[in-house]
Length: 243
Image (cartoon, rainbow, N blue to C red; front, side, top):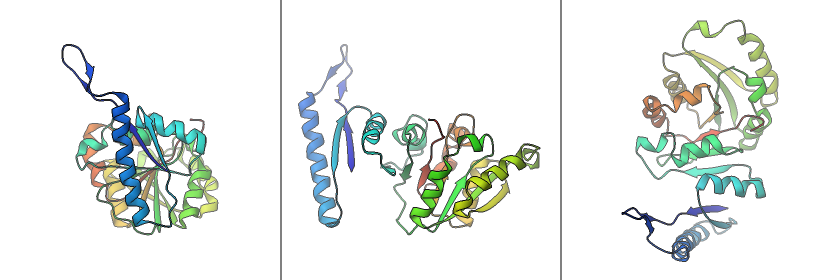
């Protein structure tokens, strides 16, 4: 299902005024998605493609649609090569953080290849309470990929008395996927993830955004360029339990 949401452009003068009617805006949206539909059916004649047009915020529209059809995953493209496309507030980052089902963000420069290695980058804080382990195991099984669990820490002090129980809990939760576990040190967590992804030739990077974890810190503007450098592979976002 290809989803397109649209807004009515507004001219901001002394009195803000819409530059076209809602019927005109919807007509433009329908024309565009019909053109895309023709391209897709021509290029992939055996693929069943449906379309859905909605008015309003794209993330809200995706969430509303997902509540009805229960998708396995939502794919979000990115037409921009600017670092700003990865900043908080962009449609891409909002979808990764806010949608309540798995989201895969495919960068413009990514080229499709069979998924053989999936890297799940995480810290161990409250992992047993938040991790949708069944979704992560299913992701590995449905792609028939080897799951690699990566923990990046700034120094050995990060591995205190709380780490071993959390690590054992995580191993138990993901046992069905038979993952490989990796631990590495790096002054900057984003650079540690980037180095591992490139060195180990990962195909997808999986993260679980939640407040106060490392992914939330990665969204700070000072880290966005490093995140953008990892954009040669798709980024998959799973969402914490109870959200």
